[in-house]
Image (cartoon, rainbow, N blue to C red; front, side, top):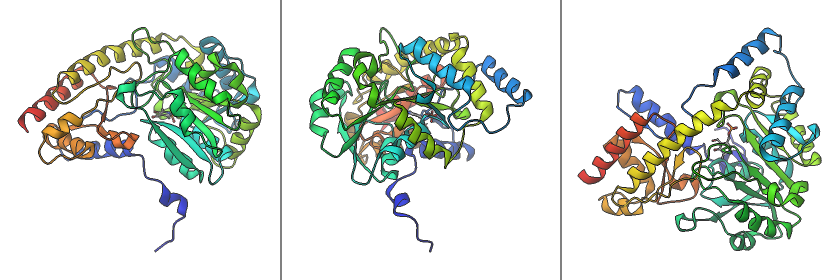
Amino acid sequence: DIQLAHRVQRIKPSPTLAVTALAAQLKAQGRDIISLSAGEPDFDTPSHIQEAAIEAMHAGQTRYTAVDGTGALKAAIIGKFRRDNSLAFAPEQILASNGAKQSFYNLCEALLNPGDEAVIPAPYWVSYPDIVLLADATPVPVFAGQEQGFKITPAQLEAAITPRTRLVVINSPSNPTGATYSASELAGLGEVLTRHPQIVIASDDIYEPILFGDTRFTNLLNVCPELAERTVIMNGVSKAYAMTGWRIGYAAGPKTLIGAMKKIQSQSTSNPNSIAQAAAAAALDGDQACVETMRRAFEQRQQLVSERLNALPGISCLAPAGTFYAFPNVTGAIKQLPGVEDDIGFTQHLLDAAGVAVVPGSAFGAAGHIRLSFATSTANLEEALRRIAVSLKVA
Ligand code: PLP
């Protein structure tokens, strides 16, 4: 047998992609499956963005670009930060990549050494711990349950920090909970971080525009500008513009760190796809009405899903403030189902008895929960929730 690297044995394949693949496989076998596992908008990329890609191809933008992105894309990213976030960046502070996932990968590779610790609030996006492990460092999860709105407190952050802490991740709005930190909550975390100058902060803002009700987006740097010299903001076009397949994300931060991340990228994937870069520039520069149209659809579905989930026995769902995920606590429902022991068993029950695919909370560091994506039609959601209700009463 081929002896594999220790590195690859430390990590697991993405569990969310695995559920999505299993649901697709069952569907292909003829089973009637509704998948609520998708981590992407169900909308098509808006047509003006598609047109920009076609034009770019016809204009010969089919060659390698600068590693860190075209001038046009970097200008669009800088413009976006100025317009939406009141933050100023120079071109050397921007790195475009193949998705925000690569932005985080580049950051960990450029920053972390063996033995270094990365503080990751849980429930977390499944890839943070594994990407930290790929960089030979140690993920340190800090758990915040439903009773605290899935948001860590300054005291929890302080308690998790050691002399080995090099990185702290903030993801607001959060995948999988939709929890969104307010300006004052961020100021509280920022106050702790200012006292630990060895720490770099990764702010993952990829769900920025998908917010509901009166929730407003704030970035840590809006309340703690003094952290700019050691904060990297990650964002991208995947979720905001329904462009997951185009693979464009970006990072903005201190020059030295962005330069190191660029070096990593130059020896792994070079520049992101030239045509997708043109499309992303058009998305960021163009009419933003499409973002609002999709946000409104997610908001309506969020209301439906939260309401229906909370009506089910043994399930309690905190209405998410943003994103297209609901993250209900299902511990009560698990107790009521004979033979079901945990969230993984519960997910299996929903697949077998209801034909509904969801992701177990333990994949996100939060056993006893499930993640349902509402990036699917209202009709699908209604039917899925009806079937889940039946499967809980019949059992
Ligand atoms: N960050 C979070 C919290 C996510 O949920 C995702 C995608 O699921 C990403 C980053 C990566 O997005 P992309 O690589 O498509 O830009």
